[in-house]
Length: 49
Image (tube, rainbow, N blue to C red; front, side, top):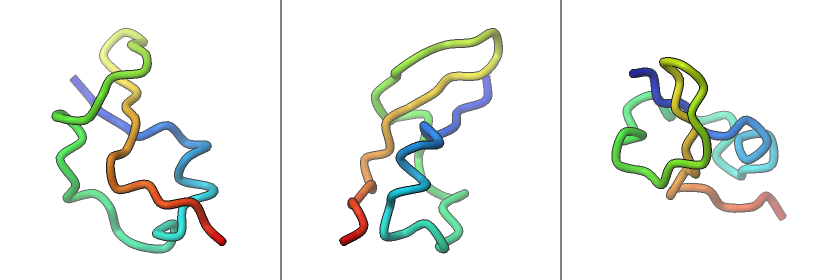
């Protein structure tokens, strides 16, 4: 399984330039599944001001 955050959230997040690859995506809430890819809601998301 490949876990990835929802891309739209990353685009508007204040941490967009940070390397988030070490975050525990496998334990985040699932939004959708597409074959081997699981789209998750990032729990570290903070909207850019």
